[in-house]
Length: 491
Length: 141
Image 1: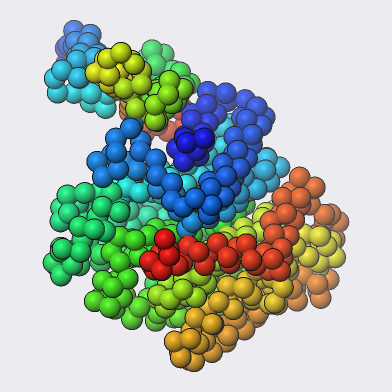
Image 2 (image 1 turned 180 degrees about the vertical axis):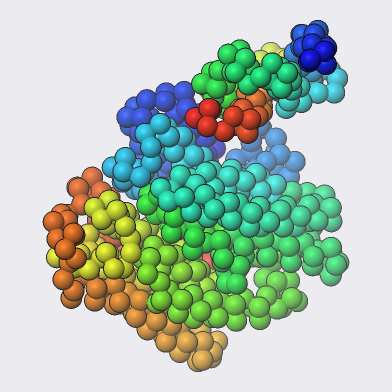
């Protein structure tokens, strides 16, 4: 099983072209489901082995580490790999019924191909220990996600995808420029090797510029306020399954790459003590949380509302990073996981609603708590998680975040995190009020519950947010191990 | 109309050489400048030239998009499949040495050949598909 790190990438990568060759929609979907469920199994095995025996390194092509491409698995990326692949598999299990309604059948095999390629790209960015390889996989995931978003039923899906393409390409170019400058300064592309060599050239302006390009590029890809403008349209107009998948995975992987660059390549000392990264991340995160949550309150399209809420949630992750402490990073990492579950589940529930109503407008959702009780109950549980109610996974993230703020005596920040939860409360309650306390519209009174093939995957993901809200030793435990290794406190 | 005749005749004369040169760059790539990507582009340029002069429909007849799509996928599969083959023969992913246990240099040679062939195939069909997509928007699905 020494090949496990590369198999995790190669299996979905090879399945994608096979889907093009198979073509027949039902066969393609069955094949893709078998393949995609093997990914979380492999990722779980990797995580288990990393926690037991420490970092795993795999040399592609048999070329040893600083020269060849190295795949390097530690607690942090094994954890990210596990939840990205699990959410990818859960959403694809949900996809067949949902895309049957939203995507023309002649494009189903291409949908599955792009989906598998997108997952390959996201997992590749996570697992690799090579800077240029990060860029290659970033392009694979980005290009396939543009294609996925453009499959949306509404014509505006095309402009949304195009807008994302332009901004995403700007972000990717910035990242490539940053990597190029770093390569110029150090002559290596291997992350571990580069971290060693960067110590000799810390003060050089080229390195500073590289850092600036990388952080701005990644901020664009992760939709950190004020670089989030591509996200609301992309999420609102993509097909339901695509929104659920991308919202659950894509921005988290960018946050992971930022963590990797800041802590493993540049080092805490350079990023925070020399440059003062926290002084820019902290205000951006806080302003982002408040602005995006406020904008979310005024949305009529509920998918767009959840998209703005995603921008706010990225703010929480970045806020955790800006503390540069064990608790702060634990909060960030565990929130990547928790938010993937909550937002994935919420968008899946929105897909159920779109499946029955053909619309995700707040007006149409009147009385839906009575006509689609299970879907709406799942939605509310996911929404409570976004607010951070105890017993849900979202509470765990906020708990660590507030602890991290308090241990650095940042009372104001802690208070602002609490106040911001009230904004989430407002936008969630607004939907609850319409769904439960208003009469269904004339035309929508006959609407029935979504089919089981949609409800079961949604229920599993939402159920997981409750499970990991109670059983925190695993998620927060792994996140803490990862945070400690990022800060160089262990191993 | 005379210019069109000239174009048609010149294209007919040039086509075989363009395709042949594409194959040359492909298979001579490990001794001289070239490789799968360049070869694929040259090969696709030949087909695109044909499409420009003889019209999209004729080009689609010699290179149907369905076939191109499959070749595109097959090219990626050849590349990744070479990597899987090296793993099955006991090496790491894409460790060509494993392909020939007796002579690693040969292994490297064969591995690169196979991989570059995949690249050439994917690039040639990909480039042609991109051209078809731009040239005949509704016609190519």
